[in-house]
Image 1 (tube, rainbow, N blue to C red):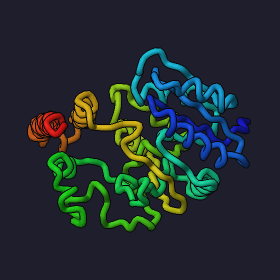
Image 2 (image 1 turned 30 degrees about the vertical axis):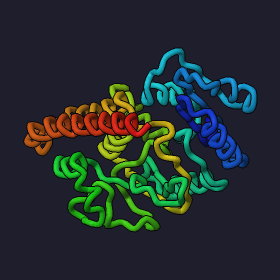
Image 3 (image 1 turned 180 degrees about the horizontal axis):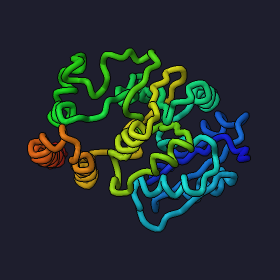
Image 4 (image 1 turned 90 degrees about the vertical axis):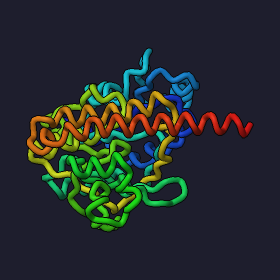
Length: 296
């Protein structure tokens, strides 16, 4: 019988200082738990690997010679891990000392739980709405793509994506767990399958959350503990490549579900809408770069 309780998997790319803070908090949180920690580095150039080897020799470090993407790197760690529970954790996060023990207790109590997410705040102590999300059906996806969910954040209809009807301090079943902190039951992960490597970056958490639900498990938002997520440090949509990855992930998700009636009916609108929104995002970023250069 496997005695390993928890496997923590952290995929890192050029966030040396944030990774160090994250590892310090993870080690503290796992002191009383039979656990293992994996850092999968996607060919960083900022001496992240040297830092891990020197300051955290107990960590299992996997060094990739190329950036294999978020999904593929996580799958590398999952394949080698042995824990009863698996935590996918962003390197730009800090967990509380009791985060892991509380999540394990929650998963043991809720035997239907395939995945659990926690309350996330940013570095300014502001609640991050992606802590609890709904699956993007055609209508929800349309509102999200065109920013209506952001403009009308208090609307239950226009902002269903962020489940505005659920209080941030209320434990609840949700549909999507954030990949920044995804606490998984191994049994559920093995049944639903690992992360889809078609998603290089973004969207893989939505896809896995959906497959967990399809396989009969529940996903929970659990605010009994919280983490700090310095959003945008491990991934950022400020460069053209990341913008393209983001909207490509949207298209992959829609096409994966195209055989469902509601997606088949609306994909003729959704796919062009995603391309339009991507073009606008690229144009906006180009304008920002030109404007900033002129200011200099």
